[in-house]
Length: 368
Image (cartoon, one colour):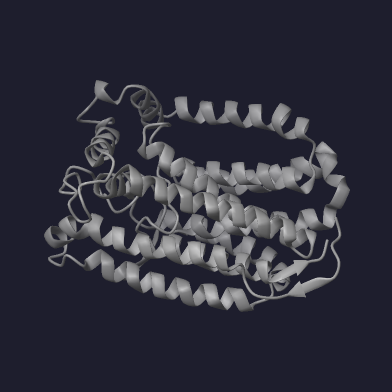
């Protein structure tokens, strides 16, 4: 799949606009969703807004740097990045847990979530190695199994932190990149997918809190004050918004009914304040993002660019679909933030760095 006659040009303007629009909506909604708890917890209604604005500014700067940095030069940083991720994933266990999960490295007032780096590091590795491997990816033990081991190793370390959601995202994206690279469908969907599904079910039912989440997803009203509480509040928020919503800033569920409404369940606040129309608009933006990301992958000047664009687009797409599915009660509750919109510094920063890489790939097209 060698592509010739590369043409450097402008970045994909539609993709660029969608990214900035999602980011702007995110900043506004973080302020709206967090203002109530901010004024009671931090004595400042704009506490989370100020932080999100800072990270957004850093993210935009990083995106522009990434847009001007030739993505092919990332190859030499791939292995060192993978190696650095290991001590970072171990370091989280030396910091206090949050609700039993070890996910953050906290230094002063700032925090870093290593898993946000790892998911992109794995994509960079897959793109580089699969580009070199070529047609040999069709062999299961030589072309598929080694990548499952590498991705599984990092997903397993993240699973030890009690972060099954990001571990699952890594494995799903690995399958997508392998499929685009030319791996046989039977190997991926006839062997690997059933095996990973069985493994996921084992981890769910071997853990009391994961099993409780699964059972409460099926009927959250059986434990409305416990495991089903967050999902019930989310559904109440979405239902209260109806078609046009209650109005920006008018959410009732964010007033200490919904736990941390500016994080993983911010989409339910969007539904309450902006209604079905607002939800459809957000979903449409993500669909446009996926469309343009696929277009960038198809028009990339080389196989490496195609696989890298596929992986980056897939991370955002999978996280968005999982988050919206969780908030709407379509799958068990899990901690996956809504890209560009949920509150979170490290998540936003690394997503924006990845967007810079994706936009740089869009500048370098091939005449196919």
